[in-house]
Image (cartoon, rainbow, N blue to C red; front, side, top):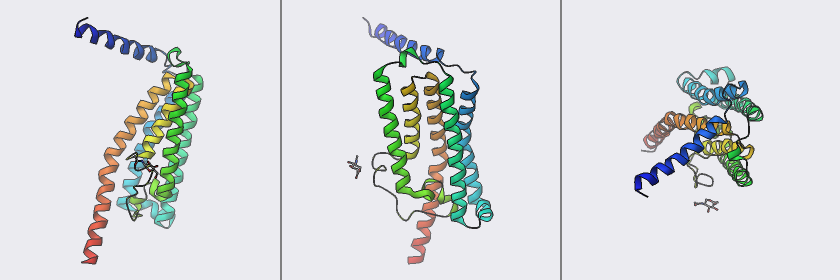
Length: 217
Ligand SMILES: *[C@@H]1O[C@H](CO)[C@@H](O)[C@H](O)[C@H]1NC(C)=O
């Protein structure tokens, strides 16, 4: 077989899987649409609100202190996450199970992804605390040192990667193509969010370090 023929054969095989999964998505289902809305809305919301807080301190003013403000935002973000997860699970209930995903191997992979994802999320929160997890730096609540202990020695963004893995794991466990589609959306939103958050966080810490250096000189 020529290289081109081999490539075409592989491409067609992958394409068949892709098309078959797409055909298994009921895209008009309302819960799925609501879940996708919150997947896109939540990171957009917290980035806009956190930047507004940084510029105007409006949450600090409402709550009375930076710490209480950060806890208020944390509670809001956490609740929005619960709403998103509620609709995601409901959406999966209404979606058809893909024959391609309906196997013990896929379910086992799902459990592995889900377990890994949960470990990353829980240990990352343990390391960062509430204010470190929920955008404390925008409130002027900075960490003393960069955390390098597990899970930060295996993942640069364990919160986002853990969350994405949990969506992937749940979708595989229940064999739902629509879940995989939602997972791709989750990944896309977190990638976008990091493009905004990483340079901003780096700048906040660079400013702090510059001020520290000034004081000690
Ligand atoms: C990360 O840290 C954990 C716990 O200290 C350790 O068991 C693991 O081997 C480390 N992983 C890497 C890749 O350094």
